[in-house]
Picture 1: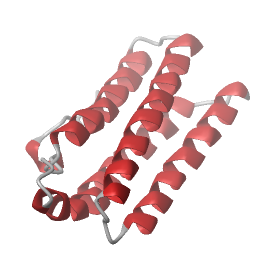
Picture 2: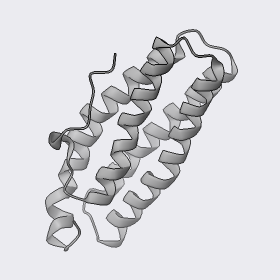
Picture 3: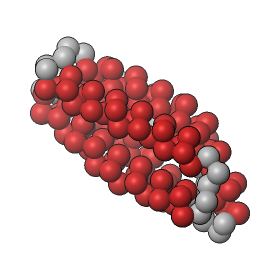
Picture 4: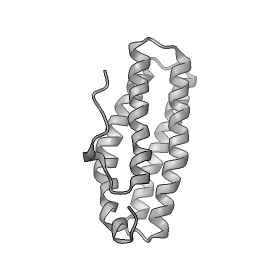
Amino acid sequence: MNNFKWDKKYDVGIEKFNEHHRQLFTALDNIYEAMENKKDKLALAKIINDLQAYAKQHLTEEETCLLVNGYPDYDSHRKQHKIFLTKLDQFIDDFNSDKYLLHIEIAMFLKSWIANHIMVIDKKYTEFLNSKGIK
């Protein structure tokens, strides 16, 4: 069972980005549901495809917002996003290679990403973007 649920503590002060981040919690729910119901490879493929769509939309929008508004830690933030994309590419390769227990590895990565990237790295831009009128 997934005990990682959206909570106000994950709020980064930008509603659009909060909505995007909620998609990661949905992905975690889907992973745990697939494990509990012993769903096949098709369920994992959908989860990975959803993560690709999330990455394409969210990372691009967040980076654009940070760049346009002159966020001072933009380069560092973008490097973190590249880590996410690299890991996603690895998951795709592992999926295509029928890696055993990949769903658990993805769940662990997402939990770590939420705890370390959203709760630490993303929260650094909250005050900066809010001061620019972005909420």
